[in-house]
Structure formats: structure tokens, C-alpha cells
Amino acid sequence: EAGNAVLSIAAKEKRLNELARSDALYMAFICNYTRHALAPTYAAQLGGVALQDAMKLEGDLAAAKYREAIKYFKVMEENYTTSPFYASALSSLSTCYDKLGDKVQAIAYLKKYIEVEKKPILRMQAQMRLASIYQNEGLALLKEVSNEAKSLAVSTNAVAEEVAKAKEELAKK
Image (cartoon, rainbow, N blue to C red; front, side, top):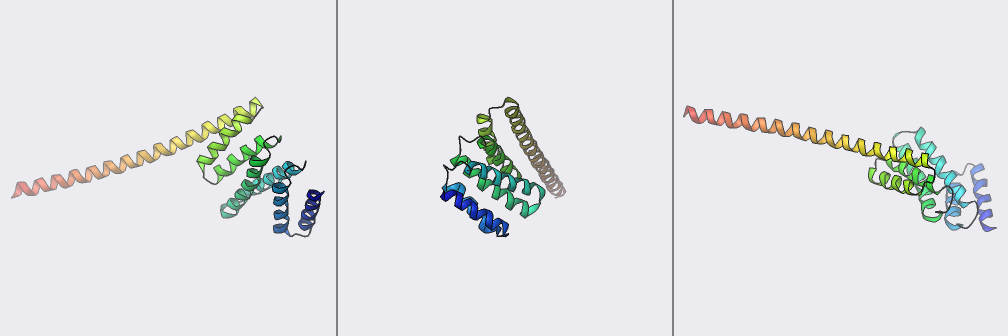
């Protein structure tokens, strides 16, 4: 009953447009009432809403929403591993970290998702997404190495020109 009371108060705060208090109450509910039947549903819903909001925004506002979504999905990862929303939370964590530019975390959560997703088509889609991330990272690395090689070639040419000038000056003496 205490969990239901927290949910009721959180809903009331939301209706009164006290969003910070409402969010804090929902987070308290999903963290403290882990045995409540609705807790994983609320964690998944609130994380999903934050993720959807983030995708509509840009810059710092989007980043803040991705971090908010991560909080909810992390609670799912830590407390609700038997929930039907667990695999989806892992996939969403991967998306959030990818959008924030943290490729290491994005890849780690995508791998976890692939391990637990039961539907073959969704697992295959995730594997394709993982391959795409690796491909993009490889292309970025190739571009970086190419730029370094060009820079090194320019530096080598400059040194060769300096050596040639020095030889000319020595030959004149």
C-alpha cells in the first residue's frame, strides 16, 4: 500500500505541474518498491518518455534528457532483470550512450542486449547495429590515420626541403 501511496502522490504532483517533485517521487518508487508489480512498468515508461523527448531535442537539452533516461534504464538493469522490459532497457541504454558519444558504453549495452533478447529478428537487428557502430568507428580511425599520414608526409617534405637548402648553402661555401 505504501508504494501505491507514493504513486498517487507522484501523480498528483504531476497534475499540479510540480515535475521535479513528481520525477523524484517516481524515482523513489521504482528504487524503493522493487517488489511492487508496477515498478518495472513505471521505470520502463519513464525511461522511454525521457528517451523520446531527447530525440526531439538538440544540444544540451537533448543530452540532459538522455542522461535522465539512463537513470531510469539503469534502475531497470539493476533491479528488474526478470521484467519483460529488461532487454528493451539494455537496448535503450545503448542508444542513450551512443547519442551522448560514449561508444564504449553503447557497445557494451548493445552486447548485453544481444545476449538476452529472445526474439531472433530483434537480436539480428541489434547485431547489425553493432556492426554499423564498429564500421563507423573503423572509418573514423582510418580517416584519423590518413590525416596523420598526410601531416607526416608534409612534415617529411618540409624537412627534405630544409636539408636541400642546407646542402646548397654548404656547396656555395
